[in-house]
Figure 1 (spheres, rainbow, N blue to C red):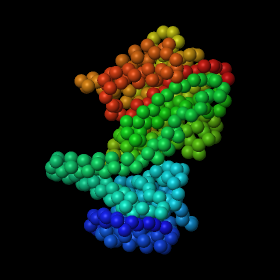
Figure 2: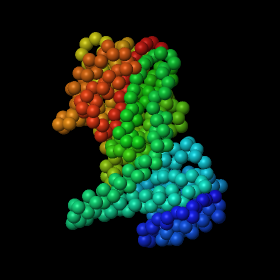
Figure 3: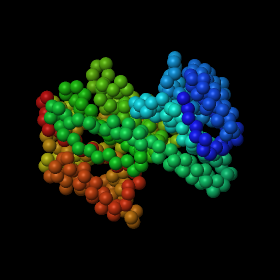
Figure 4: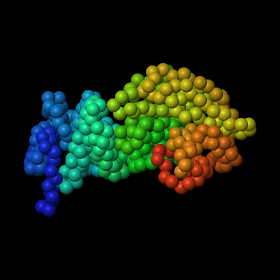
Amino acid sequence: MTTDSPNDRPIDLPANTQILVVDDDESNRESLSRRLRRRGATVDVAADGTAALIAIEDKRYDLVLLDVMMPGLSGIDVLQRVRQSKPPTELPVIMATANDDSADIARAFELGANDYVTKPIDFTVAFARVKTQLDMGRAVRQVLELQQNLSVRNAELENAMDALRRSTERTQRDLELAARVQATFLPRDVDPDSRYRTAWRYLPCEELAGDALNVCPLGPHHVAFYVLDVTGHGVASSLTAVTAARMLAPSHDPASILIGPTGVLAPASIMAEMASRFSFDAGTGQFITCFYALLDTRSGLVDYVSAGHPDAIVVPTTGPPRLLAGTGLPVGLCETYEQQTTTLHLGDRVWLYSDGVTEAMRPDGVLFGLERLTNAVASLRDEPLDSAPDALLRRLNEWREGAESNDDVSILVFEPSSFGR
């Protein structure tokens, strides 16, 4: 079922726009395609997922409107297969769902959907979103063409980039739901066996973040904790961060790679598996940095790997702080990783963070930096664990003199509280 207001103002679509409408309901297909044609688009229709995949294989489309609920291959199935060969920047896909089920919508975003509309379709909203996606696609193509042609003037490249940024900003305003989905991958419960204590803060600089962090109990004797950071901001980075967070989720998540057939996997093996799944894309320049640690709660031994991520900081109960530095390159730029080991004692605190902390900038351009951060967390040794991240955030805010951060800020503090279990 679709709705259209008599007061709708038609939205002119770019000339030669090719759109595929996929819906098992004939009236929905015809209603949508008729209105799109009136706005200048060339429209094909498909009545099921199999027909849609054949059409997408045979013809180049500028956009696909894809129904979620269909017999046989669902819209989610079709989207998953399409994204194996066509990224969101090449073929925008807007999902149409008959309900506002956050799980379906979250799954669609995770698989690479560009946007969604709910049924009955409000054409004013639907055509605005179609036009936004087409504008973004056109801007992306302009950028790629400019990059391939060095003789094009710099001004034209800047205009295309500005158009892409404006389109991205418009889309991000509609992604509050995606931000709530992203928050489900943050730490939830404290350790029921009281083997450790944690405190964390997660502050996206936009609606969606490219950071992720978590604490993952893995059986009776191990707990993993990590912070990761995807380059860039916005939709593309957040989708990659959510995908990576699912892979590093507790073992009950089917996408998790933390436990293998023989038990808990070593950090080096996990980073190697991450690297095999996230290859560097020269077109987007996107990669992941990650600090991943695995604590044996019987001995206090910690195995860890740093994939191009800022050094972790250990603040012991007595003595000076020390750095846990890694040698690996970011995920996507390296295939193997060197695993290192340290020992934690009861009450030692490990600080993990994203580069939004060390790169907090004073108005005169001076960064907060690793040395200043190390001194700050050392001075917070007697601060209660639950309030320690907030105390650090206050110092960052003072350093920036109240200015907003221009990067995501993630802080995770981990403290073992008992060994031998």
